[in-house]
Length: 166
Image 1 (cartoon, rainbow, N blue to C red):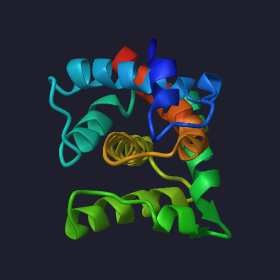
Image 2: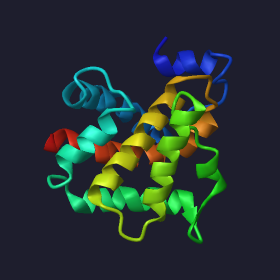
Image 3: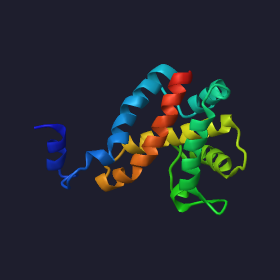
Image 4: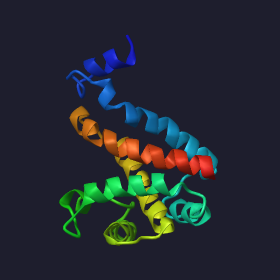
């Protein structure tokens, strides 16, 4: 039995699984592994690495990639110069205080007309950390993972750029 057959037989994944709608999530697990090893000394910390990496790579990062990824998340999370419910429901940080600090930073960056590259990198890394934690903790319905595939595609583009420019 292969992994797909096993998942189809598993009580959580009885529906047909469309691997093409999950490929960016599959790639994320490998890209994150490389990012964590090469950019975070094998231990990525949301309270340290987004800020540190943003400071280091501000002038090195490909601004086209950065602006495209930031634009994607701005379109996803902002409308009429306000954050959407989908952003407001997004969980940041292990506790309410940390979560509020990270979320407020991301909100401020997404709502800014001309956010700095440093703030964009830092904000997108906060999003990457939360996507990672949301993926790995708790049971996920496949249909909800399908909805996240594009988010992971965008974060993968950012992480690849960061690893290449470190």
